[in-house]
Length: 499
Image (cartoon, rainbow, N blue to C red):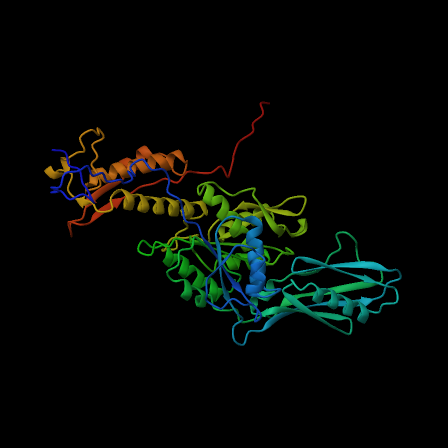
């Protein structure tokens, strides 16, 4: 007699009647929705209303202004994310300045005078600021006017004061994070007139970033698929890597990918990339971009989240990172430098003629195995992204298809009870065997191959196997093989002419 398992109808019902259970059949279900949720860990000002360590969903990016404070780094992070991604659910956690933190400072120093009235343009933290200078203005007047213009832009993450022809710019936040703010005289539209010089001292001497662990302590069991933080110091990078690694473990199943950036020279970024060797962190950087590093990483986080959600196996090359200004051509890394930065774990970018920035190759910081052997298995961000999607989908699929199944050996007589009309050799959700689970894995792999997430499934299915554990009748062990699909990144050819 065919076995039909009921969950609601008693097997020995005596009272006459027709009773029908309604339940879904998940055998042919498509890809299960992936619950993407991004989290920005931002730095707040004292005026910010968001309590430290409390998760808060952000729907309108302007809401971050009140939560983190006007002119805060956190507000800039949220705005940058939403410029490249308007749909992914976004949550934030705020941390204030660390006790004893020192604020970074930089200066503009005016020397000389002008014969004619002119407009002087500057960029502070990527935002243009300008002043009109009259021939009667002395350098003290120019400095006072520039400081006032900076203070008038309340969305800036700095304050400014003037004395004796020198404008001192101070980050509103304490910590090394302020050292990544760009200051420059903007001469692209109009050079500085003869008779006047303006010297710029870069932002420096910030010290004492917040401790990112204070945020993760509040998020220990929360599901997020992406994290972005503004701090790139070695201590926080190590803690960031440890958190992302712990979330990816088989028992945690809280897969997440981290995004962080730094402004710097080739040498500085190479050192930055060597801070971590993590498959679940993408580190990036630009040389002399007007845009702050936390804006870069937040924008890339939003962009990558959107496109990898649509297709986790497809590379992100050529995508424009809105809201981030590319460095001038003279500050662009050469192809050789970019290739070497990739080997050091730093993602690379290209500059378009209109100063927009595009992704060249978005990688992780993973470079070597645990034994220090060079290894590219986890190099591209698509690898952990695809594996996370497949692991989540497979786990959810098994949970739907076999929620209360009994486990038997393939050869057990009870395992041969079928469902009568079905000719696929499968049974209902009451009984599962290693062979039947392998069949479910094969069906799922066919779906992943149809999505072009994986390739050569005939080979990998032959190499995959399921076996009952020797140490218990309730455990099914599996070795599930996959080959992540490739991407066209390098086309190498020999163009030969016949002489």
